[in-house]
Image (cartoon, rainbow, N blue to C red; front, side):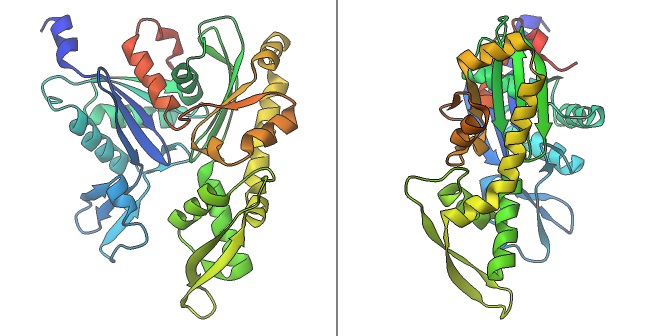
Length: 340
């Protein structure tokens, strides 16, 4: 088959395989899938019943014969078979003729990924139907998605806070000069809220409720006007449902440990940055992407601790997959950004 016809028939795919959400970009179509990275399985035959939003609605509500699985943990594959099947479903959903022409796939992964984890991502993607698989570090993809001049000899610092990991990278000349990857992100914040309510109020809540609390009143910096909200859960003492009211000050204190871990990782990255690039960052500031960057006041907290300007981009959840899309559109220009 002629190569040009081959490429014309194929819709190459960019995937942001995140712990919290999986996003898919199709060349020529844009972002076509944005779903939670959650799967429900039948325990009997291990078949996928639902994935994405449909599966998320089932969290905490499933009967004994159905299990809810998050196949990715800390930004990497925790359950290989389920991830492979999830990728197969997503690729088939966006690529009707996958059996005729297999797509090239760009997958965004954390900078701290191990060789074994890289192999797992590539194998899962290939077995799910990919013709060729290219891996790109998430902060690099985010920088490209934001529109930063990654090819130029200028230092750009990007912080990508996802569900499982926080990636801090200094980028110049199409490469990551210094990077720090910690397995702390939105999930650790949710877990901290669950633990706090259990310890201080004897109230048991689920992950979904914890995430709602974080989004509604979670903060990393004192708010101009403090907030409060009512929370429903199960009383661990008497075993019946109850409602309590909680304040943003309490949640801020609860989130302090994961926030400190992120701030310290940013400081560590800055300490390791060469002086010429550090002066560029002083001029240009730090760019924040990822869902975790939406925690109220986190940008102010990092700005206070580093004495540097910090900017949260528009649509921070979409930057990584947009970057994967830009790479697909101009593969020749971005050959240097792939992880070997």
